[in-house]
Image 1 (cartoon, helix red, strand yellow):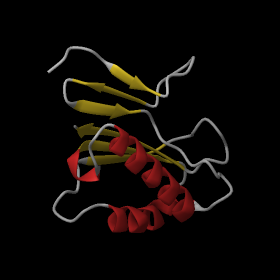
Image 2 (cartoon, helix red, strand yellow; image 1 turned 180 degrees about the vertical axis):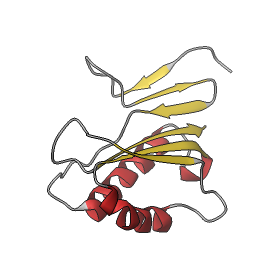
Image 3 (cartoon, rainbow, N blue to C red; image 1 turned 135 degrees about the horizontal axis):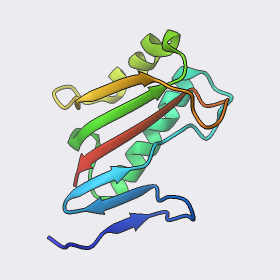
Length: 117
């Protein structure tokens, strides 16, 4: 394996993903359309994760860890409904979910994943 770090969508503040030594590290993913409810925002975030993982040559079955930041714990069950339809049975990753204030008031959820490539 190469010791080089491959960065994706590099901006002045952050990159959307870095791949190093067979592991993809994603930045926190948030909804593009913040007007949607928790189910719509969760679906958007999971779709963004799918796209980034595909660019690194991997997929959701290879997620090593997921960290979920949710603004309102009252949305926990609805978010889990979308999550459970998205994950592949037998490949559910270790996960932590915490309540947090996010950078923009319209965001209801942010998800960070790390995956094997």
